[in-house]
Image: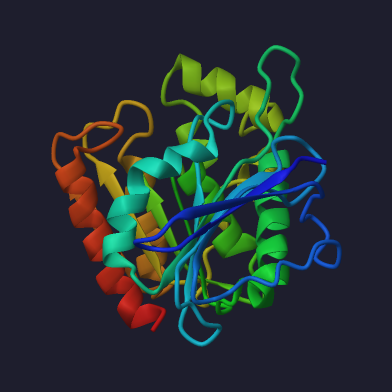
Length: 292
């Protein structure tokens, strides 16, 4: 078990740090008894037994189960790399636009290209486990059961996949994705590196393993009941082609699923701060309507 670091932050005063010597993976194991009037950071909170199955939790001051929603971030890195610390870049901008939200940034098992361990759907299963853990902690954290699931690149893919496929209770109320892979059969042949990675990650090609490719593609699971979605992409993306978001838009439109989008002309795999901040503001406006 890993150790969780809980920081209670009192504005204008001091930082009190407490080390817990037991994991919070079992909701019954370590009651938090947190003061909802005080902002709290819970670092490396376990949601499973693997070292990668941890999350950072940021609870705002004056939160409540009636008004404080939860925004969960899934990091990118081609399912083989990356870390929850990626969220630190976006956190200040999100806090400005989403004042009534708590934030969670999670790690998940990474596919090892050398050994072949942690193939898909390990990453999908970890997101499921993380969301289930978050649901079990809502009362202890003094937050509501309104969850928004978001991520960039591979993280955007995992966020969309969970929201459309593994969300029968609609605990996740909306999804947000930046330049996400959405359809593995068409993404497969984008370039040599993409083809080799996806074949290793999922196993085989679209023709030899059509079920695996469909099961892991968010667009395969879009229904008329799917959650509202915000997504963003650069037209010159050379890592995940813009066509992946065009396909997402096409499927959402056909099923009459509410969405907001922005395609940035000439942008590649990532945006300047000013563009990200505009997109976050656009997302906040969208969530005000669909996750009131």
